[in-house]
Image (cartoon, rainbow, N blue to C red; front, side, top):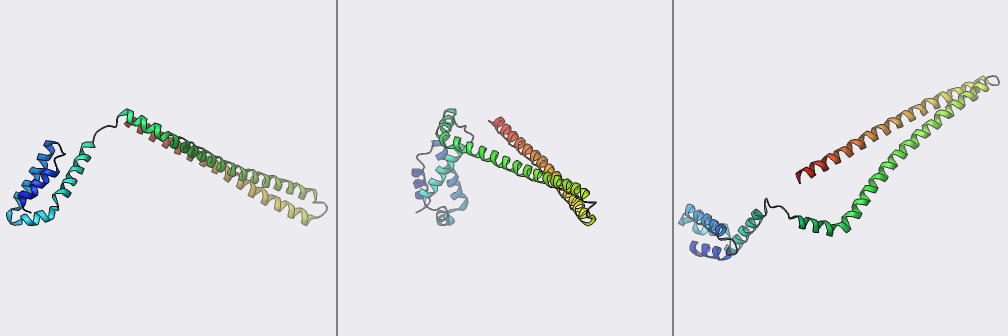
Length: 192
């Protein structure tokens, strides 16, 4: 196959393109052959491959460039939304409910630890009171109960304060996350 045969075959394979695009492509490859020179004609044909394959590539590039910058018509978006609703709506509901359940579980777990810490603190108070009541009967037992009570009160107080701080941090984090999602949503709505 020589240059003329290659360009003629390419022209045949590009007949589905608009005249302007076809002429532009043929002009480009004619100049490509001209710049390479007749000595490199066989090399250029081998480099470009078959005219059918090259034409398919050119048609594909044209199809991509023709679609750029075009907006999707509104009725197509509505149709896509209607057809995807039976799947997307339940999936969205499940995702939202799952997120709410996870948040509730996190708050309940932290609250349970806080209540447990409060129970340990109260137990420590009761232990100190029991130690004071037993002071007249056995000083060693009274001091032991008072010491255990102070340790329990300290552990309970640390647990309560830690859990309260964790709940506050979780609340702030969830608010920040929610604000980020809403900001992105508003930003996306502004684009459309």
